[in-house]
Length: 435
Ligand SMILES: Nc1ncnc2c1ncn2[C@@H]1O[C@H](COP(=O)(O)OP(=O)(O)OP(=O)(O)O)[C@@H](O)[C@H]1O
Ligand SMILES: [Mg+2]
Image 1 (cartoon, protein in one colour):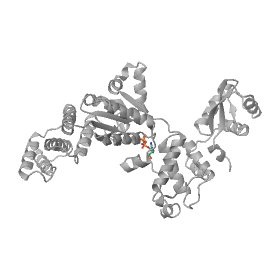
Image 2 (image 1 turned 90 degrees about the horizontal axis):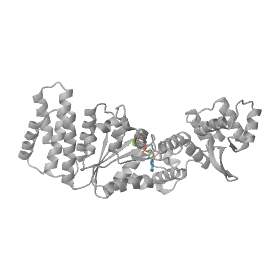
Image 3 (image 1 turned 90 degrees about the vertical axis):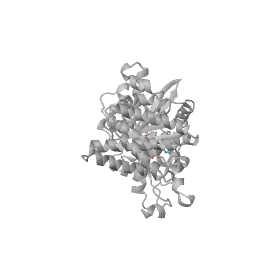
Image 4 (image 1 turned 180 degrees about the horizontal axis):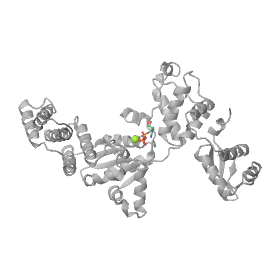
């Protein structure tokens, strides 16, 4: 797409919904989440092990990015961080194997002792054997022979052929299928050795807990409960809101949720992003992708307002709207205005439609500029418009529905020492019915 460079001087589309991961991105594009970072980093710093944290929040709220930032800070402090993705697992054994495989894969290029390397090689060989035994119909002997050869290649050139062959022999002799119990003990064993070997604090994080196909997120926690208790490591789990809700329920006295309560020392709830921080994300990205450091914001002020209103504090949604709006409306190189952006978003169903009654209410608020649920003006206008029920309570329900659909926003007004909630039209709403 040459126009992004030619018309806008960006090296590529500045907006991406991918989590921030690379160190350079985390250093330059991350917008601070002081509270969440502080809570996690202080907690991990002050404990020697056996501590489990949760990061929870809505889809796209910025959980993985916060996790990556925390891990990068922890690595800077000289600790070892390991990250596992368990999405797509459907049984307890699969889940445990995926964690074990994920850990071993990341230990490949770390400077470990010979003994540690040998153990990693043994576990990897056994995982491979286990997979082949369960999936392939080849004879046991040929499976063993092929695995023995692959173990041989695992060690670098620093150890001689004879030693490699003897290690490979030992490993080949010990191959056996894994069970749930042996997988748990293998995980415990690996973390214990790693702690002794590296003398570092070890932090294992597991993202996308909710995408692992178990019916409930807590079930996967139950499977590795024993591993989580080890003093050799810390754990961070990332999942959707269920985590948080369950955790809260425990404190409200729901005994059934005992698994979550006994495991987590804290669950961090990722909050909505304030509008200034959303704008900061956009500006940082524009500066980062600008060729020669100079850039124009592709969106006019009111168009940005519309984007912020629809995104409602969700960074992934923010990136999606910016990216699609830019690609669709930015080709000519002229700054995108709110109306053309809205036309595009409406076509894409980013904006919810209004019911007939909601539309009547909206038109009245639009004409009056601002209303409270019980205001005389509102009630009078509703009567004129022949809306039958006009109690304050019913008005509030419909006004709140309009807030949810982002046609209205609320602000608090103080009148004779009483706090009143006022409803006003959003920027977005101004462009919906104009055609
Ligand atoms: N603090 C932040 N600073 C800068 N960009 C952020 C921040 N938080 C989130 N983003 C951006 O928002 C988008 C979504 O973030 P992320 O993938 O971390 O959310 P998530 O909650 O893990 O999403 P999902 O529920 O889909 O796993 C990404 O494009 C990311 O770059
Ligand atoms: Mg994520």
